[in-house]
Length: 267
Image (cartoon, rainbow, N blue to C red):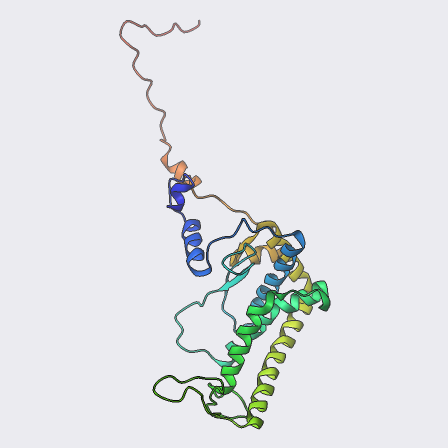
């Protein structure tokens, strides 16, 4: 459908990518009017995520980064695993937390602590939820041990009391909060070091996003090398296909209509 609306004769990978992004992230909101300052903030925010992902070995490879608003997000960095995964290691979770903190850190390093935006709200919520589960469900806290701590605010509706009794003491709850904060602070410090050490690449990638709006993983590496991004619109046959279709011998001249003689040759 998309290729037909664009009057294309073939369905290329670009159309498949567009359809996938629409399903996973929502429709593009190109009608959303953003100021140049907001676009720049978004570009540096997403560049921060991407740079942290590139320099955290445990992070999945970057599939694409975009500053085109989709759904409720003003931009996004998408990573895809290289294969099926059924469990996640602690090292990978820590790397994902550092990547999540990269957006806010990039804003602070570029514009200053007083100029940060609320664009990191989703990242903070995701990081807090992951850190809490690391501590209370997955036994990844050295101080609290391998104990499953229930959620004090949980409600029960399966024939039990609507009010859930406290499953942890006040002291333990405070210890859980300290552990969560320590995990997130550690991830924040890792993101700060990565983006400080690679400040030039952060700036180069943000400028590339402002110019191209969407960059694939390969294009991100191209921008970081300082090379221009070259895109070919797939609608015509590739050059080698066109050459293969050209006949090697000259076609014979078509026969003249009856009653017409060939034009006389000079000399």
